[in-house]
Length: 368
Image 1 (cartoon, rainbow, N blue to C red):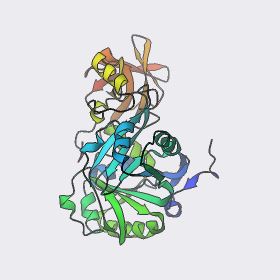
Image 2 (image 1 turned 135 degrees about the vertical axis):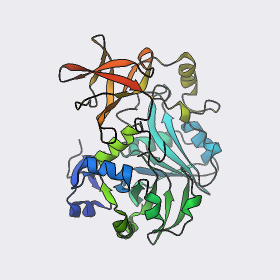
Image 3 (image 1 turned 90 degrees about the vertical axis):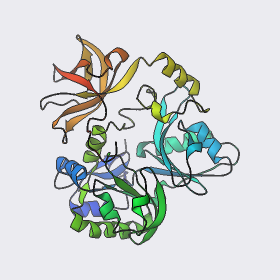
């Protein structure tokens, strides 16, 4: 276990401390879980206006070389060849048995690829990719060289337009560009983990304070709020965006997790035969959205039951600030995965009814 003394600090650590943020050790980094107004207020600020996240704990790799495209086609499930420069795709990497190594973003730049991976998996992902390198492929871990800020919310473009002269109206969802933002030349994208419109800024560490200052200054008149990991988790959960280590991991496959849409079954990749077979024969279980009534809400690890029998486990759960009801994700047998199916969730020795609902939970996000 990594102690607080051993945990790493992002380029914005001193800023978080100056705000009085509540800090926690997350994936080996000291990160703000919430600020003074609390998680619910932060969550609603992103849904209704605009919020700022420090995501500098995420990992970034650069892939170059004449065989880079073929290499990523083999090691990721989505069709990398469909990307043109400036485009981004959500994808995952799979073990030979179909289990998920990690989910990630693949950026296609002019002369290279840029991968964004989960903080807890940086070393594992790098080792996995490195072990599968062939031909002319160079893999570089840039994680320690970059800070990452996310501006998220329906009014994100209003703020972003004050930070850059780039024509944001022409910038579609899941695209990226390089331009001056907050006075610094950097890579930025129209992406996020909240369901709302927004931008993610990949900032050279030495320029982190400059860009943060510019964002905060421009954000004052727009009501920009600081957002911690707690609200980030409830925002992504309302959109059924999977969290590695909770909803997906080496024991789950993309087909079971409802991620077949990021699997190109026409190309060759690691575990293709396993996933094609599972797709055709139907998986024995699926990750579903569960809604409940009342104020008692499920948490990760709680049992899902049917007729007194444990049939699954809650992978993520919270009380939804947007919907004002308990929500959860969990794996259930295929026959209980249909919309409208009823199951029970064991909470404090009692069983509370939950209903399988169509994802996402929150239907009014800017991007869904």
